[in-house]
Length: 315
Ligand SMILES: NC(=O)c1ccc[n+]([C@@H]2O[C@H](COP(=O)([O-])OP(=O)(O)OC[C@H]3O[C@@H](n4cnc5c(N)ncnc54)[C@H](OP(=O)(O)O)[C@@H]3O)[C@@H](O)[C@H]2O)c1
Image (cartoon, rainbow, N blue to C red):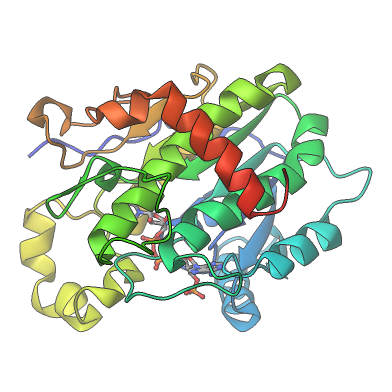
């Protein structure tokens, strides 16, 4: 089994005082570890959380380890565009300069459902909410340039439990095809990859570098719709660990590398160890060429960019 990739110690010791970051889904899993590491390096971190109480608990936990951590807990529900707008309005002032936005929050293999705006749940939360958020934070990211946008995608943008990742522009919401939770997850994660690629093209001249990442197979609550979490965390924990499941701090390494390394390639895909159709990709790569041809389809990326902007009211 390939060894997980880890950031260079220098990168994780760099002084980030004076730098501000927004991390979505910062109360749990990979987002929590990402926010904690940035705060430990002196950054100001906005914990953008669906549940305020969970965000406050996460902030307290970070402060127990780093009493001087500069944290700001704010409510953000990516399944509700009104919440995304109100988050951005509450945060963005003429002075706010952001060094980075980590579009990390996500859901996986959910039962069929819709967001407050009527979007298929996984596309709505994982992709469309982040599209609007990113757009509303672009002025702040421009002021913080050189700055980074990191979309936390997945190796499942390639193949999720046997379903090949594709974005169906003529049926994004599963209105005319049968709903499948893994197919919808793969679509939303390919959308994360294509969004980063399009953002690199459209916002690159503002000094904003956009990338997508696969964080690895990480022991978090993401699997809640696929198996009881006690099975993952207790019954099968040693077996899953032996099979390559990593802990959340290692799961945060690819996001941290993409945020902090000097030589990050605009629009590229950075992967922790993963499971791909092409086994040569399983060792991951910072960066990695995705084996999914749809991840390199410029017409699909542009089509998704245009349609997503229409859907979230930016067109
Ligand atoms: N774990 C893995 O093996 C793995 C592999 C590949 C990719 N990823 C990606 O990694 C990212 C982080 O996932 P994780 O593994 O750390 O899972 P997690 O522990 O379940 O964390 C997900 C985070 O997203 C938040 N979230 C969910 N719905 C939201 C909404 N509507 N608005 C705002 N926040 C919302 C959750 O908030 P609540 O606590 O309030 O629900 C939580 O903070 C996801 O994008 C996932 O697709 C994970």
